[in-house]
Image (cartoon, rainbow, N blue to C red):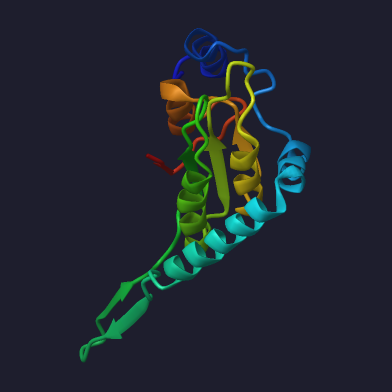
Length: 171
């Protein structure tokens, strides 16, 4: 993946996940549609979970501070988020919307501007609708239908389609 980028991601997705990830990125319409189409009880459950997770993580943000010494010396601790983060959400035969929420919300609360999510599709290359709905609720704009080592490599090194990230989280 480091050497061949998207070509390698496509090759290994076909080999290990059994589908061609073209297009690799899930469209904004598909994210919106997933949210619009899920059951209203499930939607409410995701919203409640989102609210609780956000409230918890807002309490974890350390404060920045400056201490000035008696001789003009200054020491500081500054809290700054990374620019972008990647989250890995397992998929294929199972759905983990909680993984989306538990990884994306802390990043958003911390101030990360761009989150890229990778998750393998099923045999037809589809990501579970509830997982996509959780991504939509969490404000993730970039979702890619890839998994495994090739997805981690794409996030770590970047490709033509996937930006290199500063940190990767997930199970």
